[in-house]
Length: 180
Image (cartoon, rainbow, N blue to C red; front, side, top):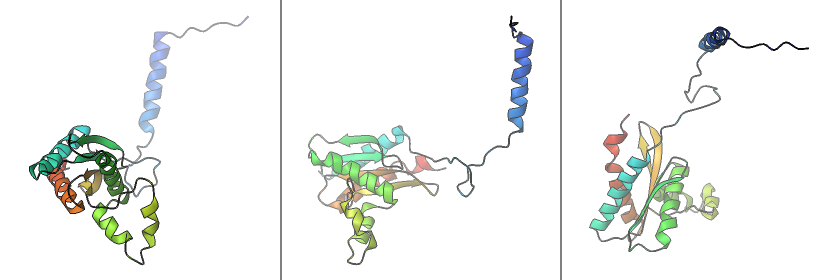
């Protein structure tokens, strides 16, 4: 017959203390990108500030009479906020998200990416055929402290250069909030 052992509160406390002491001796992992650690950290714009940027971009376009859709994504290109003017065309929804995703993926404005990949000798021409890639102005990375924290995409103004104007107004509205 096996004897059953009951844990007393004292033995539980001793075990907890031993675990804490062992954990305290384990070296802390550095999160610097140049280390060989198994993890890393990243700053990402919050949904609240993504909304503030989207509202400012939409307001800039509204001021000019341009009904647009504005998307703000995290650094991986996943949408955090999408705002659509009630008069913006149906196509502007996906295009705004695509512009922000493209800017996030290439960490560059969609105007710059388009200029580079449409050159006759561009090695990157293949990205023009990738699903979801949008090669027209209006997608801009959002940077803070030397890191990309998100991206904004605007669609619906007449021409990509005008979409850029609105996207830059959205970023300008949150620049002081992003200082770190």
